[in-house]
Amino acid sequence: MGRKMNYGKDYKYIPATSIASGSGIEVLPDLYQFTIQIVNIHMVGYPNKEFVLIDAGMPMSADHIINAVDERFGKNSRPKAIILTHGHFDHVGALIELINRWNVPVYAHEKEIPYLTGEKSYPVPDATVEGGLVAKMSPIFPNEPIDLGKNIEVLPSDGTVPNLPEFKWIHTPGHSPGQVALFREKDRALIAADAFVTVKQEYLYKVLTQEHEISGPPRYLTTDWKAAKSSVEILAKLNPSVAVTGHGLPMAGEQLAESLNKLILHFDEIAKPEYGKYVN
Image 1 (tube, helix red, strand yellow):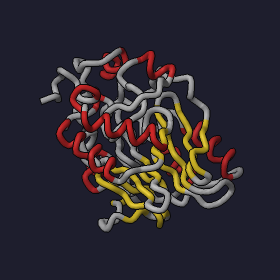
Image 2: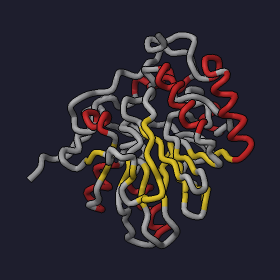
Image 3: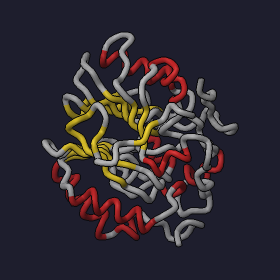
Image 4: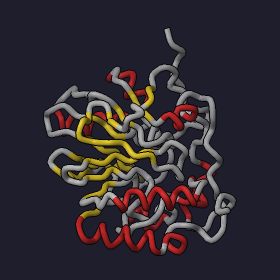
């Protein structure tokens, strides 16, 4: 019998939210975004059919996720699998409760595994980084690693995504060592995780109002800015038609193309902070 799963000792509810919290958007017929406080989870699959859950939201949000799943896929539905884009607290916050309820496999990139098995903590969030009030709040965010024991599996090395045969995973480090994005060639749908986001996540007012603008990864948790820029460039080359991100509203079409091009050309001004302990 495997060891008991545990959150870190600093696991707690975070009192931060946005106007989008508790609402969902059908981005495509089989791609649904649901917002929990200040982060998005995604469900891939047609309503009332089989589906896969991408990420697991904020701490203590399991009931919200279960209710959203039941509403879209039917009472007592469960995903075929949970894919983690990375292991930061706002992407694994309800994971243990969901595993216990659904008993489904969970997958992440091999470089993210130590942060999901209690072996390593992420670098401490940088409250000194250039940015607004959310950045200043970041020291209260849980930082100790979740321990999933044997309830986490490594994504296949060939880029395939379990139970999502049309998608490929793409390694997008910078925000975390093993962050991945998911891309579907046939309609160029991109699940970008936090490689780039569509709200200035450092600024409380913009988070609260979900002001729509492209930005780089959240500054207070990003430790490798060279890799972060490279990851954005890799995703832009895919020429996505629609993108959903870990924070902010979906973006599509000409607005997405122009915004990604602008982000690449002016990454240091738009995304990279002028100062902070991880900037250099």
